[in-house]
Image 1 (cartoon, rainbow, N blue to C red):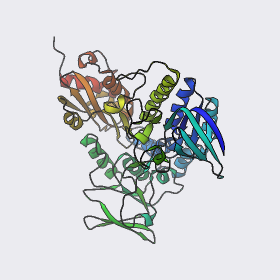
Image 2: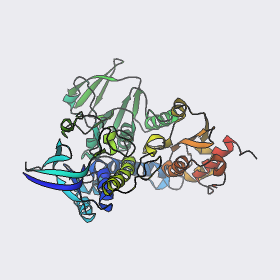
Image 3: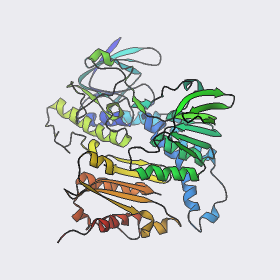
Image 4: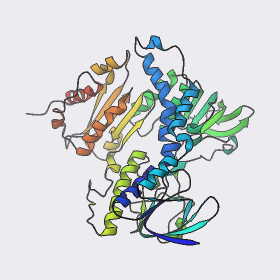
Amino acid sequence: MSEREFDVIVVGAGAVGENVADRAVQGGLRTAIVEAELVGGECSYWACMPSKALLRSAAALRAARAVDGAKQAVTGGVDVAGVLRRRDAMTHDWDDSSQAKWVERAGIELVRGHARFTGEKTLVVTDSSGDSQTLIARHAVAVCTGSAAMLPDIPGLAEVEPWTSREATSAREIPQSLAILGGGVVGSEMATAYAGFGTEVTVIARSGLLGGMEPFAGEMVAESLTGMGATVRTGVEVTAAGRTDTGAVLDLSDGTRVAAERVLVATGRIPRTGDLGLETIGLEPDSWLQTDDTLRVDGFDWLYAVGDANHRALLTHQGKYQARAAGDVIAARATGAAVDDAPWGTHVATADHDAVPQVTFTDPEVASVGLTAASARKAGRTVRVVDYDLGWVAGSSTHSDDYRGRARAVIDTDRGVLVGATFVGPDVAELLHAATIAVVGEVPVDRLWHAVPAYPTISEVWLRFLEEFGRPST
């Protein structure tokens, strides 16, 4: 078995691992990245990109139908074959050659195969032909293996061969009916996508949709899904599943049944750390890897966990943010450079705690950042909540004939700063970064009066927030 040495070894060549490796190389370190599947990872091939491709066409059609003068030109429905062609183009037909070329151009060495720890800073990588090699890291190993769908322990569920998000986003044929277990982001987005295809969708979400966000977000998405013809079942859960000649049948806790051609499980995520040999370095397989704010695993000076594997914020953009900090701090520590690990410093992921932005691409969209009203109060903050109907903003009337949306600002009254914001409505994703900047920058509310929103745009909601909150004292 051959043996090779690098300054840094990154396990997992998804968006997060690529960024860790790139920053380490820019810091002057010889870096290898190990990938057992496709370079580019979950986001490129089975999550962020294909899911948005599946959602966009029906969303564009609904938007056109909401504007007089445009709706008259809409004479047909969604061309599902066209949607799938566009999805396939965005995933490059699950061919990672272009991303592998980027890795090479970035000066990162790509090692294809499955990596397992055999000891401190040491991994054995086995490729698809069964050949193995040993990789040794001089300075650091970064685990960037992401997460996978969690399959709940429901009798008979495995026998119905349920989809996970991977199968839902890469489907070649669209089922006539789809039952979705779970009302989180994946469940809500896929319900929106498949309802747009004309599939008979049933969402089974015991605690409602989009738990953890402001309650009105899930309520508005559920109402919209119902309007698209989907069924949203809340307050119940699946107790058993079984196969039928035409698909599956699900028994619910209230004694009713749901039959569907396909079942999608979207009930949560688990870490992809089960077959990494973590036990050889004193860690528990299948566990989330706890880290400090420089993304270094607790109890280690050479091991880092970045992205979903650390369970800090299971979002691609947040993982890439972590990756930049981790790659830079690995290089700094390796070369003896100064480490800036104070809050909001160069080498920390401070935003993971209270300033995480997220867009859920349902219809309506849900865009949020920071704390909800409930989480702010639970954290001991003294806050005032300002709600506003986005339909009252002048810009919304130019957007569609019957714009429906809602916005909430959560303001820390002790410090006079925004700590959270949520927007629900068509195309509100583009409102989010302004709110993120205000939260991260801790911009005083008094100063926000001087950030004048253009008229007529939906961003005028910022002025309405301020008017509702009250003018600054003089």
